[in-house]
Image (cartoon, rainbow, N blue to C red):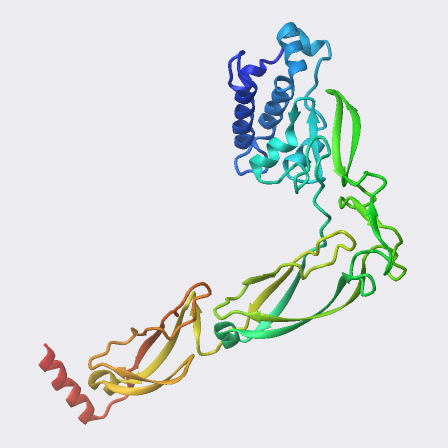
Length: 373
């Protein structure tokens, strides 16, 4: 028994091309295997149905032969499933063109991958593929507790691929020209045709000769061999903003590995590791400390000096302070990473009760107990 592709997509037999596309988008989004709760078998089935009904010629054959169409070899169970999934995930730098259907465009728009090759690349080779991009780099830095609270500038040294010092990353020998790429005719793309069970499938990818730029150096740089990059040490001054917490990541766009000629550099990710402090305990933007006081201080109150992030401050202990109660110091916590202001400093007061008392002290406490009852 042949499959009912109209039923699989949930549309009527007279559905328009736009209705088919909307149905496919909705179901593909629902069953996409990379989503939580996705269903790959269902996604394959939806893909198969749309590859047939979304193509004018194949739909006519399906409508004509119905259940017999599959037995006659009119279509198969999905064209190049692994390639299709790469397009669905935005990988491979190609889009898929099944006659009327541009699945790379559909899935790219739906999942935000830009399956048509980045900057305006179209089915007919108009526009150029996105230029290749250098690798991202991650570095770890150690911060002291107060460095993370108030911010600091750190120096980072790393060996990586940088733009060639002679050609400045162009790949061209100084004085030579940049000319149109002969292999792709300046389009930045090359088209290949592969035979699949659905017939001829066209893929459009970045030109391997120019990396998608559409142009090349007339004479390659002797220093880097035309690659446009070389290994060298880089030294960066990185400003760590006030308020970063342990595990925070700072992204420096364009400070990663160079991609060489006609490419864009990757990004540098700086991961902060904050050393704990013996006295201060941080929770978000608030600071917590403990203060031990004597029993008389708790009963009669007092004014004591405590350590804060901003140095020593006077703290008033109210009369009758209970043990483990908290006193809040507004605005003496950690600065907010985004926006103005700071968190608070909470002081937990711990009352030290004496283990041994003199007779006179006991008598005073007994009299106090009688007065309070």
